[in-house]
Image 1 (cartoon, rainbow, N blue to C red):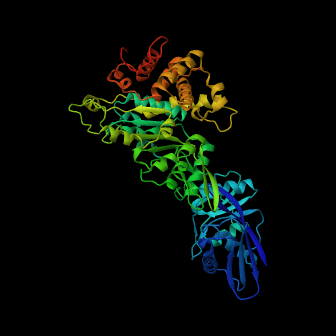
Image 2: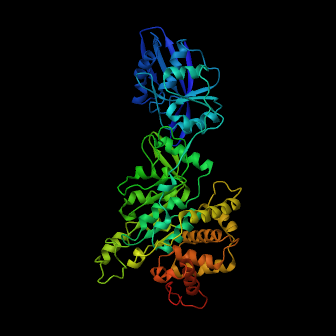
Image 3: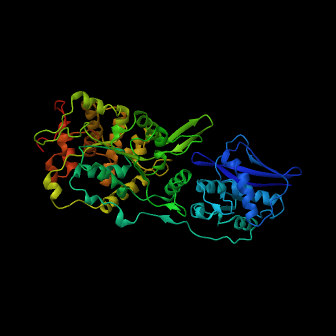
Length: 543
């Protein structure tokens, strides 16, 4: 007697179809699982036999052979328990065959209760793609499986319920997948940050174009405080982005039981002791790392120089390509990793370099400062679109009234800028924000005037900028123009982009309270790069 049932295995963040084939033969009673299973799959014979008996069925007194096909793909985890048990019951004639194409996943307890498993959403998307009509999942995973619209999803608690759903005796329980969100009253607001107008402007631009940003400043300047408020500036997830992010979190086992679609962009802030595999993914089989968990969201690296050199260098590929290729002996996987990178660091080991306090508190030697800064390589620094200085606040700024804009006000402008970008990029595959522009598309869609390009060329010559910096400044200028709802990129937009790209302490001076910081930055760069002026540093003198 033979029976088979569809299941799925996870490889990276994707699912692959698996056929659970069961054969009952005469001979000494036994239970064998083949098809390159790991120990968790091999142990399924004990869990399934005990759960079948405790669910009111009789375990067949025959030789039971279970094959997980294809046999050259490694099978890991306990999600094959339910399809194995259902296939055994069908082969023994204890339940009739399914009336429609069915796929099942779930782990069995000895009592017959079905326990939740990870990766149900990508499995549900696979089931819909291969023509499966009905899917049987643990009740705790039903909300995420229901995101695969058009699929009949049965969330069951016990093996008996799964058997009833398999034969069509259990009615299909329609129900929308629920989205979970952080309550608005507990979300940190940008208005709580005092001062730092230049940094707030930079974060608004970064959010509007999905640009990566580096904050440099002394301890207590508010770098971490600003970063924690960045998620409140980001636009809402589209349905497609939410499904992508939820799939990754499901594979990583980060979704809470009963949780459906993610409604907020992911925000990940790993500790600086994280390993390379923990940051970019790895293991056998490959599992998503923090860069993949931050897909379509934000990755914050506090105290950037304290991270391991190998971990930081591993960020090069995902920052450029939006994905990570993880290759291991037993398999390879491409993990999605399109995220915004926000990092913070001190200017020196003690953090007090450049402060105007008397007496000076920085006692770091030149060698100590150089060694500290060299912990972050030039290629990694070059991949940050914005390099922003967070200056120390004065006592009057700390004790004075808070006059900054709220996160909702800034987010409204960001949403409007992103809408303009989506309209501009309609027809371009995989491009949703200015930071994702590459090559010919950047030149054609940026719309920079001749004056803007001339200013950018002079800035590159005087500041010694790389070709990558040239393109990133152009993207920044395009985002600034989008925030102002301007069709073309003009010289003032490039001027502000250059200032945001190049750290300069003078531009973040105290006069920013009277004149908007982005206007000061534009004036400084335009004046320093005016034709006929001698090369020199970009400063704020005379504004």
